[in-house]
Image (tube, rainbow, N blue to C red; front, side, top):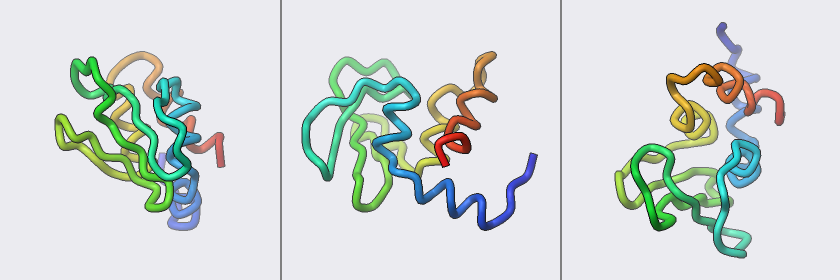
Length: 94
């Protein structure tokens, strides 16, 4: 399935904190600018994945992965049965 440029821009404009919460990530911290959570890409015991609301990006300071809302959704559950559902969760939020 391919998306046009307008749809991709609309998906990237979604708040990264809302998308992470909708994907089931437990968010730590109470700040409006930056929140933290456990990184789904590696065995994480301390919240090393930072979500930056003003820039609408994420960055894991343990494994170094980062990106936008679409990347976060693709990284969250890449090859499981529910991957299609999680990949299009971002689309449903928009």
